[in-house]
Length: 267
Image (cartoon, rainbow, N blue to C red; front, top):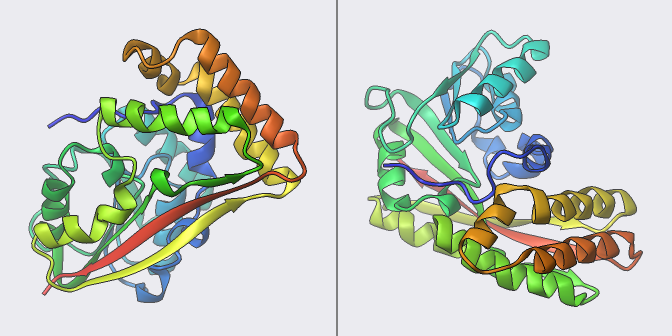
C-alpha cells in the first residue's frame, strides 16, 4: 500500500526533519528506554531521532526504516560521524515490515501516521513486530490546533490551505487527536496518552521556521500539490510565502504546534 507524502523531500523539508532530536520530539518515550533494548524507528527520515535512540539503548540493536531510498541514504551518511555500530537504516514498507513477530522491544514513529491512508493497519503492523512487554510509541502533530500570533492573514490563509492539501494527498493533518482511537482499533487495550508542543518564538526560531515555510510554500511538493489539486495558484502561494517572512521578522511572532503522544503496551 503506497501513500504519498504531502511535503516531499525538498531541502527545505529535510531541514525541518534534521532539527528533530529525541529530546525535542520523543521526550515522552525516553524514560522507558534502557541499554540493550531493540528499537525500530518507523518512517525514520534523515534519522536524527533514530541515532539518538540508538545511543541511549546501545548496545541494543536500532533500525530505522523509511519508504524513500534517497532519504535512507542520507540517514546512513549523516549517521557515520556518530560511529554507532548498533544502528542501521533500511528501505521498507511500514505496512509490511520485513521482520519476524516480536522482533523489537520498542517500535517508534514520529510524524508518520498523519501521512498514511490507513493508520490503523500500520499500527497493527507495528504491534506485530513488538515483543510482549514492549511498547509502540507514536507522536503526531494536530494541525487544526496550531496557534499563531500576531494574526497575519497570510498565515491564516496558509492553515486554511494546508488542511485540504494534506487531506487531498494522503492522511489526516489533525492526527494527534485521533491517535488514541486508532490505537484502540488496532488492538491496543492499554494506551497511555500524553501531549507536548513545539513553540517557535525567539528571533532565531522564527527566522528558521518562518524562513523554512516561506520556501516550502513555493518550492516544495506542498506547493506542487496545492496547485495540482486546484486549491491555490502561484499568486496565492507567493503571498503566503511573503506572510511567513513577515511573521519571522515580527518580534511579537509566536507559533505553537500541539502534539499528541501514545504508548501502546504489548502484552
